Length: 295
Image (cartoon, rainbow, N blue to C red; front, side, top):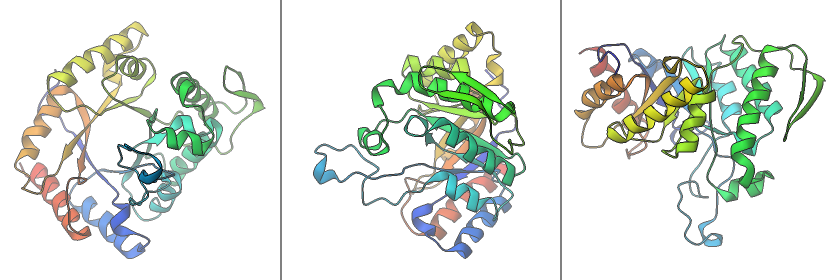
């Protein structure tokens, strides 16, 4: 277990559905959370929404009624409005060409002066994969190869690569990013294969697992996979999440201490469970961040 008094960087999501295209509202939101002590901003990914009428039993949440963003475009825009660190949370990597994601990430990293983390995940929606022209059944193997290709493109001026899914012959991206390589944080469920992958190749780990015994068991798998791959488990940045609830924020400090004890170095203050307009979300995030900062 880690030192429960160690510093943890707080983050917040970007409420695209509340800000819309209002540049002034976006800047005000970013300035407010930065002033409260939030250190990074996360932007979610969803290119396409499903029509539940055409997909009986659709589990959601990404349907036609929910606005969503293309994260690399939005992150490039936000880089001009804030000095916060930026992160994708997360890009559904197997639906996209590796070279294109590598180039997009390099651009964001350059625009932020090296303050970008590429959060990636496997994805779960067959609607996404169909619309993006990607094979859902090979996504795990392709995901790993994509990360290998991207890291080489970020760090080598000329790349030649021949793999199962990718071929690059004497080519590269220019300019390359400030960070070489850009940190890649891997989002997972509690599936053992996904946890082992995060341990083998992730710079960060974003578990969709509540803090507690389930997280402890999952972290043991991640750490074991890291050691088996000759890596230091402590080099993999654990990124947690705390849901800000309508009934108040008394739980925030307790959950933050639990994430610290589990080894988290980043914790996202999530407002997905909150109703209300943008002001309510700003108040919840800034209030929680100030409570943490003032303890």
